[in-house]
Length: 119
Image (cartoon, rainbow, N blue to C red):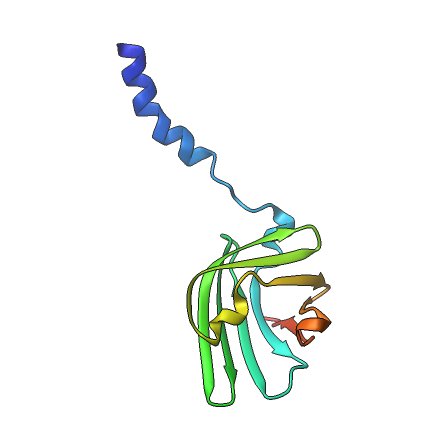
């Protein structure tokens, strides 16, 4: 009985110690990115070191917002939105290829690049 109680009390502490913290290479991608090379469209993407992201997009009079989680899978950053408004759908299940300071959008999806801000 005492062992069961001790285990039940220790379990939350153990789970807190084993969180899925992104590795250093993934954390190095965290920052603010601005969309470049897409006509008449503006977009910002913020990747946080904790694995969360926020994205804004504007195209003419339409705009949108998304927030959720991101992770690095091989040479790509994969976005998984949990909340999406309007054109924020453009962030849904998006895979961006890591290319130096640029996160590239596939050419068949319009091309362009989210360029990392120096800040």
